[in-house]
Structures are given as structure tokens and as C-alpha cells.
Image (cartoon, rainbow over all chains, first blue to last red; front, side, top):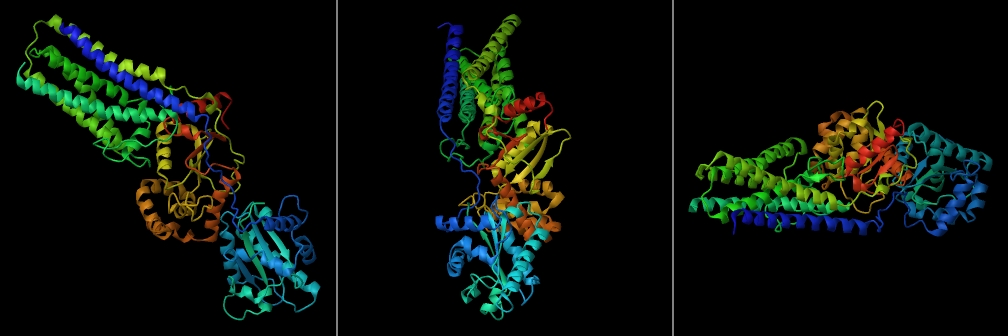
Length: 229
Length: 404
């Protein structure tokens, strides 16, 4: 074979093989791209937490309570008084407290001295730690109570001041623009859903010492609610 | 033709084949990504024996995703992979060596001068790319090393062949042959490159409109970290996990692209670690929450801490497997001045707000993500297509009047 012709044939064959490989690779990518354009990505979107305990029943009651007590946009007031809480929850005090049973790991009980709405050091620390542990929760409930000493009206006001003390501290300590939409206050006085000694085993700001019903209800029960409404 | 020359030609053929093999695999891996999806890539001295890299942690992945792996990236999506002309050059050397071998004639200096010039080209390119790999990319890939070795091999074979070649018969014939070889060499490079450009899929123009936008771009939670504040720059937000290798690679690509200079870039931390992120059931990057908290606790030092975290990402990922305490202890050792802020409720709360910023914008649970002027750069365009898309996005924003 003519040397020049042989050189051209060799070069042609090698170039052809190279070009065919490139063509096949690129063509294959183009076909995959066309196929992929029809498929959705299936990537999850970021959202607030919605834990397993957020049953339909719980959500219905939460929505009622949160709307009436000023958390859900459109609610008229911030904070529920005992009679309102009782009517919007439409349940007994025991059932109301049972709603919070799944929150044992996310809740804390901020305790106060008798006839006082002042947060002590232990209360401030526990409140800060609990609030900072928001995780994916959307709502922070503050359910304050009072022990039965004194008149019903006085205790109603005392529990309101306890709830307010908690909110005031959160506003001062956490510059959280969502605070208005996420913190809900319920003050129950001595009238509704009082805590029984079973709650002594929950996280409290005064973990040592007496834990009678009276001590337990001079308190603000706080909890993040990991439910989407 | 003497037996020694014949052996040297065989050596030239073997090294040309090796170079073509490594450059071909590299080209194949690059071209596979033209489908805008994620693929495992080959990164081994003996391709086929080692497992392919699907995690994006190999040097080959770093090299391929770096802006130096291809040219003309702003003109065509992904650019032209530098390994493609590499493949063509080795293919040409193979054809040339076969031609010399099959001719059976004693080699002339006219042939070997050209061979020297042709084999010098991959050596020079290899030297340049080795320097880039060490100084810019910070990783050397095994396929690239294969190409470097093959380049040296063909050059050494060419030098020895030149030493054994006989003098040319006439000057005129030498230049004519030289020119003919050069034309062949150029054709070997041009044909595959033009074929590549002709067949590569067109960029879907709809993607230029972005892949969504931020619902609430404002920083009401005060969680964004300014990392590149250019006066008059277009606002851009990078959503990242500080322990994610892809995020580090993306940040480096963005910086090397040169387009970062036109952006007022902020970072939102989105650790894919279940310690603090309720949106993931398994921790993709254990320790990322602890690292993120540390960065947020650093205040004005945050960009410096973030840069340090990227530099020590592998070490921190290993520590992350031992627990958050081990990660934070290492960072505290490096930045003792921020230790007092760690673990405080306010710092934890700030990290939580960073996640809530992501929730408020309903962003996909993945990292990295880039938003330019509130528009999301499609995830498929954050690697090979970054320069192509950014150049167009910025041009459009500039034409639209100013970027803010």
C-alpha cells in the first residue's frame, strides 16, 4: 500500500473511533437529559415539625385553643382566661391536661413562690433552655396556674401575671420576630385543669423539695408544640 | 527499521493508548454530566478495579467540578472538557506511531522532530494542570496522574526515537511533511471537539428563568452571614451545610468563577444533621449542627470561622462521627474567644432561626443552593454549568437596571 494512503487510512480509522466514542457519549447524555426533564425531582421541602402525637383530635383542640387565645393569625386577643379556656377546649380539666401527656420531653414547669409572679434564677434558666430548644415546633404554650389560697378572682389575676412574666422574659431575652405568632398564654387561676402530683416527675424549675399539689400549681407550664395546624 | 526503534515505537504506542484511556475515561465522566444529573465517576489508577466515586469526595470529582476542567464555560453549558482535546492528541500520537511502525522504514528526523513537538504539547499541558491541581484545586486526581505519566512516557519515547533517527533527505521535503502532520493533528482535535459541540444537548432556556424564588427573602431572624460584600453587587444567598463536601466545592467554584466579585453574597446555614434539624431523619453530616452553632456564635468572625471549617472539613467530619462535643472542642481550640458563647440558649436559638428561615421560604431540603436576586439557580447548574448560568443571570439583572 502507498505509504501516504496507509497513513491516511490509519489516521482515519483512529479518528473515526475517537469521534464515534465522543458522539455516543454525548448522544447518550442528551437522551438521558430529555428523559429526566419529564421527571420531578422528588426533593422534600423544608417545613415545620409535625410529630406523631399530633393526632387529628389534638389538632382540632389546639386550633380552637390557639385561635381563641390569640396565637393563630386572626385571633382577637392574646391570652385566655379560665372560663374561655374551658369553653374553647370543650373538655374536662383532666382531659385538657392529658392532651399534654405526649409532651413530657418537651415541656417544663416553671414554679413560683406563693403569691408571686417573679421568676427566680432556676426558673429563668429552665425557661431559657426550654424556649431555646424549639427545634421544628410552631407554637409555645404557657399555661399558668395558681394554688387555691386567696380568692378566685385574685388567683385568676395572679396566674395572668405569671404568664405575662414568662412572656416578658422571652421578649427581653430572645429577639424573636415570630414571638407574637408562636407564644400563646392561658391563665387558668385555680379553677380549671389543675396539675396533679403525677406532674412532679416532669422537668421543674425547683426539682428538689416539696411537690404537693399547691407547689405544683403555683406555676407556668411551658411546652413547645410540634404540630402544624 | 532497527529492532530498538521498533521497541521504542511500541513503547510510544503503549503510552499513547494509556493516555487515550485515561483521557477517554475522564471525558466520558464529564460528558455523562451533560444530562444535568449526578453520576459516580471513575477515580483509579486501574480503571474498573476500584469502586466508582459516588460521594463526590475524590480528587477526580474535585478536579472535574473545578472551573479548570473545561474551557469556554460561559459560552456553552459546562464548556469543552480539557480532557477531550487530550484524548484527541493521544489518539493522534497513536495513529502517528502506528504509521511509523507499519512503514518499516528507518525513522527520519523530519518525523521525529514533529513527534517531539507533538509529544511536548501534552507534557506542557500536564505541567500546567498539575500546578493548578496543587495550588488551586487542592486535590490531585488519579486519572490526571495517569495522563501526566502517559505524557511523560510519550515524550521520553519521542526523545529516544529522535536520537536514533537518520537525517532528512532534503529541507523542502521536511517542511512539507511537517505541515501535513500538523494539519492532521489539528484535524484530530477539531473533529471530536466540533462533534461534541454539535451533539451536546442545548441548555433548557426555561431553566434560565430560575428554579423558584424566595418567598420571604428578608433577614428578619438576623441569621445571614455576609461573606462577600461588594458595593453595588447583586444580592445573593448561598444555603449551605458547613460539613457538606459539595458545599465546599460549590463555594470554591463560585470563588474561582470570578462572578463572586459581582455579588453581595450571604450565607444561610442549613445543617443536614438531625441533632438540630428536624427535617432530616438521618444525619447526612454528623456534627454539622455543632459546627453551625459555632459559626453563628462567632459574630463578626463568622466568615473566618467558616473558611477555617472548609479547610478542615474532613477532620471535622471524622470528629462529627464521635459526637458534637468532639467537634466543638476542636473548634474551641482554634477559636478560644468564641467558646463562651457556645451552648448558650441565645446561640442555639439563632441556629434554630436559621433553619426556620429555610422553612419560611419552603426551600428544598438539600445543600448547596444559590439564590441570585431572590431567584434560585437550578441545582443542576451549580456545578459544571455555574459559569454559563451566572453569566446570563448577572447580564440579565444588569440589563434590567441595576441588580438590587
